[in-house]
Image 1 (cartoon, rainbow, N blue to C red):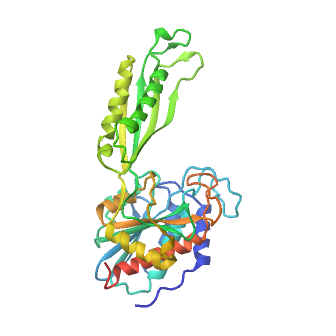
Image 2 (tube, rainbow, N blue to C red):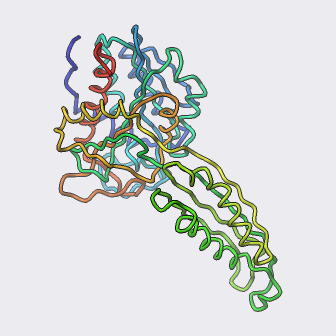
Image 3 (cartoon, rainbow, N blue to C red):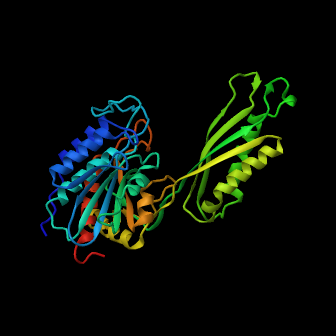
Length: 386
């Protein structure tokens, strides 16, 4: 087999910056999808746009196994605060999580793999709507894992919690489930000066919030990880009026296990029980957005070995996990694979967190990400692949 061509750093950075300037939200990624489609067709891939609404699939077919490489495309509803030449040109929209880099990396990997006889098929899934956790399921529903059937899947996330030049790879659960709950508390409104004539939903909401925290402290195995966060509270419109209702919204995160199974009922029972104690009522809507992301042990070892060859074993980090979620979990629940974290924070510097208006990356991470995914695909598909 011919060797991999060197990474074209200039093109990689230019592509990332172009996409960064033109962010598109979930299921609105038409410009990004058109750019991907044109690039892949120029490399002689079989291209199918419109998979999962705005997703794009590029396929290079050979006899043997099929590996899927995934890159998410969507931006966030964030107003960028960076004063850089490539800052977002779309008001209120920003690539604040590195997905612009993921697309650029995916296209560079496609360029490098295009001329090679890989001993198998490679399928690129440029996925929409990761931030709303719907894109992976939409692509799977449209058959991205079939024709040809995918045998393994790999992906990466540029990660500002790690310095550039490091890679985090580990087997097992590495990203948490993402659940969303909405609670409406129905009381009886009235004058703020006469609370005894009301059933105050604001007071009930405060007690519900406190009680929900006890789910982690008292209803969870202390050796398992879980987070319950109430992130929105809405009630009332006037300082002297007790409203008749209050709304709460929040999230539950786990790495699976019994708390993952029990959480929907626990949240419902807690909210309704507290409300009833005050004479109020509570309705609860609970939605599972994505399951925990679980890396396959064998393919994690493969990716870890490739990473060690690339950057040195001393720079490959174990134990890198987050309570953040990723709908790559749906791919890895269907086929074995691995999802790795590629350090993107400047060496010796402080990086802005993901989803912040000052988020940016050290662009050397793009080169490392492209090398990692290219080499993993080749290693998996080679004759003596695992």
